Image 1: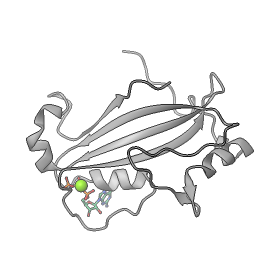
Image 2 (image 1 turned 90 degrees about the horizontal axis):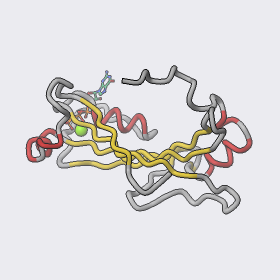
Image 3 (image 1 turned 30 degrees about the vertical axis):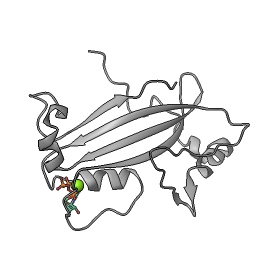
Image 4 (image 1 turned 135 degrees about the vertical axis):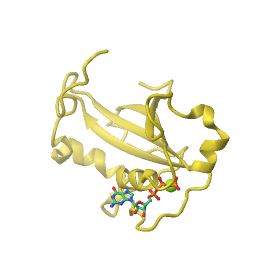
Length: 148
Ligand SMILES: Nc1nc2c(ncn2[C@@H]2O[C@H](COP(=O)(O)OP(=O)(O)OP(=O)(O)O)[C@@H](O)[C@H]2O)c(=O)[nH]1
Ligand SMILES: [Mg+2]
């Protein structure tokens, strides 16, 4: 299996501080906080900014109370719940994340679609669980077709 790239070697660090990065970030922010996007929504980019989108579906599974919802909330810039309320069914959260790639110097809009699956839904759809041996808690990343 190929070795994963070294941390910091894939995307240009601090690109979001540049003029180009700031312009891109404005499209996903509202009042300096991440905008919440629905499954069918996407940021309105200026016509001059023609950038590709790389979409991934991230399936988050694991035992009740291990922190799946808290993890997704943190990554989405949302308030992390202090108390545990079991997620009923599957909760989806869309996170857009613009970045500049080191090798090609291309700007890419990453779109992560988190599927936070509560334990009761997992029992119903246990064929979606990670393979045996990977443990019960996990993230499964599925690239979505048709983009990039
Ligand atoms: N200290 C600490 N607490 C955490 C962390 N992540 C989650 N928690 C707490 O753990 C509890 C359960 O977190 P949830 O994210 O709701 O758990 P869950 O896996 O979504 O649970 P289900 O929806 O029942 O499957 C909450 O009280 C969180 O505040 C963490 O990294 N550190
Ligand atoms: Mg939950």
